[in-house]
Length: 190
Image (cartoon, rainbow, N blue to C red; front, side, top):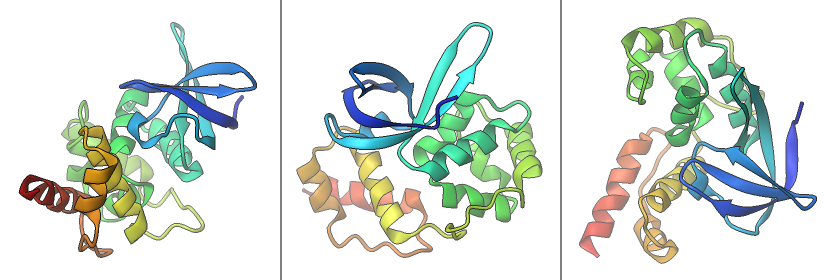
Protein backbone atom coordinates (compact mmCIF):
# COMPACT_ATOMS: atom_id res chain seq x y z
CA UNK A 1 0.00 0.00 0.00
CA UNK A 2 2.77 2.48 0.97
CA UNK A 3 6.22 2.33 -0.60
CA UNK A 4 7.94 5.34 0.95
CA UNK A 5 7.36 8.73 2.57
CA UNK A 6 9.37 11.90 2.13
CA UNK A 7 9.42 14.14 5.17
CA UNK A 8 11.18 14.47 8.52
CA UNK A 9 11.46 12.65 11.82
CA UNK A 10 9.70 14.62 14.56
CA UNK A 11 10.06 12.25 17.54
CA UNK A 12 12.40 9.40 18.44
CA UNK A 13 11.27 6.68 20.86
CA UNK A 14 12.86 3.38 21.93
CA UNK A 15 10.92 1.26 19.43
CA UNK A 16 9.64 3.72 16.85
CA UNK A 17 9.80 7.18 15.34
CA UNK A 18 7.12 9.71 14.48
CA UNK A 19 7.63 10.71 10.86
CA UNK A 20 5.86 13.79 9.51
CA UNK A 21 4.87 14.06 5.88
CA UNK A 22 2.25 16.52 4.56
CA UNK A 23 1.49 17.70 8.11
CA UNK A 24 0.57 14.19 9.26
CA UNK A 25 2.67 12.33 11.85
CA UNK A 26 2.98 8.58 11.32
CA UNK A 27 4.18 6.21 14.04
CA UNK A 28 6.68 3.95 12.30
CA UNK A 29 8.49 1.01 13.88
CA UNK A 30 12.16 0.98 12.88
CA UNK A 31 15.12 -1.34 13.59
CA UNK A 32 17.18 1.35 15.32
CA UNK A 33 15.41 4.65 16.03
CA UNK A 34 18.66 6.33 17.11
CA UNK A 35 20.07 6.22 13.57
CA UNK A 36 17.62 9.00 12.63
CA UNK A 37 17.98 12.72 13.25
CA UNK A 38 15.10 14.99 14.25
CA UNK A 39 13.94 17.47 11.55
CA UNK A 40 16.29 16.08 8.89
CA UNK A 41 14.50 15.81 5.51
CA UNK A 42 14.71 12.26 4.20
CA UNK A 43 12.96 9.39 2.47
CA UNK A 44 11.87 6.43 4.58
CA UNK A 45 11.00 3.11 2.88
CA UNK A 46 7.93 1.41 4.30
CA UNK A 47 6.33 -1.94 4.88
CA UNK A 48 2.66 -1.92 5.91
CA UNK A 49 1.90 -4.92 8.15
CA UNK A 50 -1.72 -5.90 8.78
CA UNK A 51 -2.90 -8.36 11.42
CA UNK A 52 -6.31 -8.99 12.96
CA UNK A 53 -5.48 -6.83 15.97
CA UNK A 54 -3.08 -4.24 14.51
CA UNK A 55 -2.05 -2.20 11.49
CA UNK A 56 1.63 -1.23 11.72
CA UNK A 57 4.09 0.68 9.57
CA UNK A 58 7.71 -0.48 9.54
CA UNK A 59 10.31 1.91 8.16
CA UNK A 60 13.87 1.72 6.87
CA UNK A 61 16.43 4.32 5.84
CA UNK A 62 17.60 2.08 2.98
CA UNK A 63 15.42 0.37 0.39
CA UNK A 64 17.56 -2.79 0.54
CA UNK A 65 16.84 -3.10 4.29
CA UNK A 66 13.11 -2.89 3.62
CA UNK A 67 13.48 -5.58 0.97
CA UNK A 68 15.50 -7.74 3.37
CA UNK A 69 12.78 -7.26 6.02
CA UNK A 70 10.15 -8.51 3.54
CA UNK A 71 12.32 -11.53 2.73
CA UNK A 72 12.77 -12.34 6.41
CA UNK A 73 9.00 -12.14 6.95
CA UNK A 74 8.55 -14.87 4.34
CA UNK A 75 10.25 -17.35 6.70
CA UNK A 76 7.72 -19.57 8.47
CA UNK A 77 7.70 -18.72 12.19
CA UNK A 78 9.54 -15.39 11.91
CA UNK A 79 7.42 -12.33 12.60
CA UNK A 80 8.07 -8.60 12.35
CA UNK A 81 9.67 -8.38 15.82
CA UNK A 82 12.24 -11.04 15.00
CA UNK A 83 12.98 -9.59 11.56
CA UNK A 84 13.36 -6.12 13.07
CA UNK A 85 15.76 -7.48 15.73
CA UNK A 86 17.96 -8.97 13.02
CA UNK A 87 18.06 -5.70 11.07
CA UNK A 88 18.67 -3.59 14.18
CA UNK A 89 22.28 -4.74 14.46
CA UNK A 90 23.06 -6.28 11.08
CA UNK A 91 23.35 -4.87 7.59
CA UNK A 92 21.71 -6.58 4.63
CA UNK A 93 25.14 -7.58 3.34
CA UNK A 94 26.01 -9.29 6.66
CA UNK A 95 22.73 -11.20 6.52
CA UNK A 96 23.44 -12.25 2.92
CA UNK A 97 26.93 -13.41 3.92
CA UNK A 98 25.46 -15.51 6.77
CA UNK A 99 22.93 -17.04 4.36
CA UNK A 100 25.59 -17.77 1.72
CA UNK A 101 27.72 -19.51 4.36
CA UNK A 102 24.74 -21.41 5.85
CA UNK A 103 25.62 -19.78 9.18
CA UNK A 104 22.56 -20.56 11.31
CA UNK A 105 24.44 -19.49 14.47
CA UNK A 106 24.44 -15.93 13.15
CA UNK A 107 20.62 -15.82 13.36
CA UNK A 108 20.43 -17.68 16.69
CA UNK A 109 22.12 -14.73 18.44
CA UNK A 110 19.03 -12.54 18.09
CA UNK A 111 16.26 -12.43 20.73
CA UNK A 112 13.39 -14.83 20.14
CA UNK A 113 15.25 -16.84 17.50
CA UNK A 114 16.21 -20.32 18.58
CA UNK A 115 18.20 -23.02 16.77
CA UNK A 116 15.22 -24.40 14.84
CA UNK A 117 14.10 -21.00 13.56
CA UNK A 118 17.65 -20.00 12.66
CA UNK A 119 17.98 -23.19 10.58
CA UNK A 120 14.62 -22.41 8.96
CA UNK A 121 15.84 -18.92 7.98
CA UNK A 122 18.87 -20.41 6.21
CA UNK A 123 16.74 -23.11 4.53
CA UNK A 124 14.10 -20.67 3.31
CA UNK A 125 16.34 -17.82 2.15
CA UNK A 126 19.73 -19.21 1.07
CA UNK A 127 20.30 -18.38 -2.58
CA UNK A 128 16.92 -16.64 -2.94
CA UNK A 129 17.87 -13.04 -2.09
CA UNK A 130 19.86 -10.94 -4.51
CA UNK A 131 20.30 -7.18 -4.52
CA UNK A 132 21.84 -6.00 -7.80
CA UNK A 133 24.37 -3.59 -6.31
CA UNK A 134 25.02 -5.58 -3.15
CA UNK A 135 28.11 -7.69 -2.62
CA UNK A 136 28.14 -10.41 0.00
CA UNK A 137 30.75 -8.46 1.95
CA UNK A 138 29.78 -5.35 3.89
CA UNK A 139 31.34 -2.10 2.72
CA UNK A 140 33.70 -0.39 5.15
CA UNK A 141 31.60 2.80 5.21
CA UNK A 142 28.50 0.71 6.06
CA UNK A 143 30.36 -0.88 8.97
CA UNK A 144 31.55 2.47 10.28
CA UNK A 145 27.97 3.78 10.04
CA UNK A 146 26.71 0.72 11.97
CA UNK A 147 29.38 1.26 14.66
CA UNK A 148 28.20 4.88 14.99
CA UNK A 149 24.56 3.74 15.28
CA UNK A 150 25.48 1.17 17.94
CA UNK A 151 27.38 3.74 20.01
CA UNK A 152 24.52 6.26 19.71
CA UNK A 153 22.07 3.66 20.96
CA UNK A 154 24.34 3.15 23.99
CA UNK A 155 24.02 6.86 24.80
CA UNK A 156 27.38 8.23 23.64
CA UNK A 157 27.51 11.79 22.30
CA UNK A 158 28.45 12.66 18.72
CA UNK A 159 31.77 14.09 19.95
CA UNK A 160 32.62 10.89 21.87
CA UNK A 161 31.65 8.78 18.86
CA UNK A 162 33.82 10.86 16.51
CA UNK A 163 36.87 10.44 18.71
CA UNK A 164 36.24 6.70 19.17
CA UNK A 165 35.77 6.00 15.45
CA UNK A 166 38.48 8.33 14.10
CA UNK A 167 41.09 6.18 12.31
CA UNK A 168 39.33 3.01 13.52
CA UNK A 169 41.04 0.07 11.85
CA UNK A 170 38.17 -1.56 9.93
CA UNK A 171 38.56 -3.79 6.90
CA UNK A 172 35.97 -5.60 4.79
CA UNK A 173 36.67 -8.75 6.84
CA UNK A 174 36.27 -7.11 10.27
CA UNK A 175 33.09 -8.34 12.00
CA UNK A 176 30.81 -5.54 13.18
CA UNK A 177 30.97 -6.80 16.78
CA UNK A 178 34.79 -6.51 16.77
CA UNK A 179 34.64 -2.95 15.40
CA UNK A 180 32.14 -1.95 18.13
CA UNK A 181 34.33 -3.58 20.83
CA UNK A 182 37.38 -1.66 19.59
CA UNK A 183 35.45 1.64 19.65
CA UNK A 184 34.21 0.88 23.19
CA UNK A 185 37.79 0.19 24.32
CA UNK A 186 38.81 3.59 23.00
CA UNK A 187 35.92 5.24 24.87
CA UNK A 188 37.00 3.57 28.14
CA UNK A 189 40.53 4.97 27.74
CA UNK A 190 39.23 8.55 27.35
